[in-house]
Image (cartoon, rainbow over all chains, first blue to last red; front, side, top):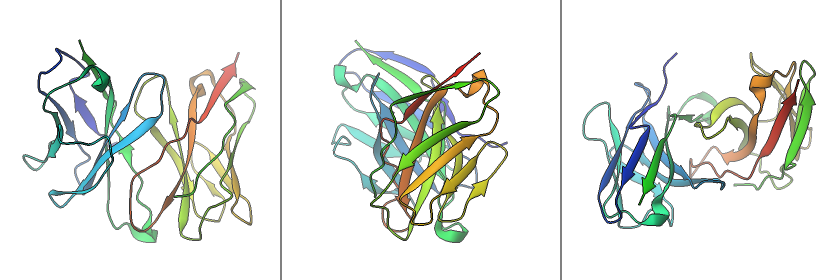
Length: 117
Length: 111
């Protein structure tokens, strides 16, 4: 069964450093997402991406964040200068777009645990 | 997107049916109900979704009331591996495609 994969599973970085989190969405999916979950808190939407551009972003997704689809398979989230409060689980998700009935089920990856020291 | 209300936690005996309720009284006509679960800190796992008819798949059944203001996820024979946080999410078929997660129901299946 196709699945979303994410690397690395755990990333430790120093405050102020840049990190890139990588995701490989399901191959025929067209819509991509990033969510994050701070320990003990809700899963929060960060950004959605379609046709090589951002479709929607949340207030969390400020200028320190960027997303890119550098090739036909990878989808990345970059945090330019990490802060302590960026420590969280980051989940990538993907979905088919325009499926019949208008539903758009998102399939999530296993997540990357980011620890900022 | 309509807001949802779920009980904070529930227990269920192994082998019994787990019935997880969700209230979505402000749901609109074009909004689907999705259910996901999260085991520990793993990625949310899709379970089932529906619009107004009851739905069943290999994992669960979804019962939506006629007025669509509430729904129930049924795990017919709960196992210890079903211990997780279950999220009910209501999302429109138009406009934004993001999910808004609540706090969910923490289901504990007891041996």
